[in-house]
Length: 471
Image (cartoon, rainbow, N blue to C red):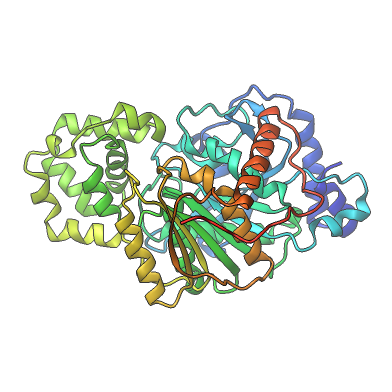
């Protein structure tokens, strides 16, 4: 029996219908080898004719899905996809999709349903999609049968599984939208917040309007998470966003573009330009007038690649070599400067407390950019705990910082006050005893994920000694 069958017996109505749909789903779920349709071919992603008539966050359709680690290992979690009304960069109506997850709690006793779900928080996880390719969207990459070599989202699932072990509900929105707008401003926040609205209204999750909501993202996901918390107070003021953890957020994409272009990580700038050409007329004009045929091939290739494949395949590609005039001259044009100014975070101060973690020697997101973003937020009144890690790299800080992030978010969910809103440079965010124990627990959770075992709520919260990070 699924959770929606139980809710149907208890509450009746829509949840009962979803419960019967779950039963039908379970009869065909054995077809694990079948690959899901990509979004452009999947009718689930087609907007209805009356899309604009619905308020943002309205659930327009839903379906049960199966989650697979790397598309191969079936996961013992309960998962649905919600298609809902949201808005794009220009506030035009748009169909967006989020994947919502619940731990595989033991529901053998229907009377336990209220105890299991009472007070359950919602984590809005922003994935580092970092791609234009539709197969990198979380709604595709997380599904059983989806083979997407080089997807960051598929790796991140090993870490966000820790939130499910704590009993949290998780929403993973396709924050880049239907066209893979990597790097776009504001609209990732709209899609994430409307995904939260949709999750709170979706009966099988058994959440409520006052459910505490947290936000977590790293790198490209940290940028999307920052857009969400910057917009929350004005775009979705009814949501109870109690805190956000942002890892290596891309505070100034323009500076990142200039720094990475032509270097080891030049794949990221190529993907960003491939995305921005569909958003900004100024970028399209430059490409129409100044890019060479080889440059068009480069951008078309970047649009098809997953991020972890783009890095080696597009390493040391200099966009300037594919232009008919100097790159510095192109970037100095007022229209292009306006584009990169529009991409910059920090124009609005979040109204919830933040935890920001950043490698001190990050080769992708420079620490100076994150320092500046934190300063902007603090000037706006946001309490920010900012940890700069001496030993971690851009790629190692996400797993090493996961226990600290989950504990910090748990404190915000519990309503504990923020007692440290300072900047500290530490040897490692994993240096404290609590973090080391958390890493061992994370390894156990990852083992359950790899083996396809249930991710059930822990029976008791783990003890959390005081943080003693070494400087």
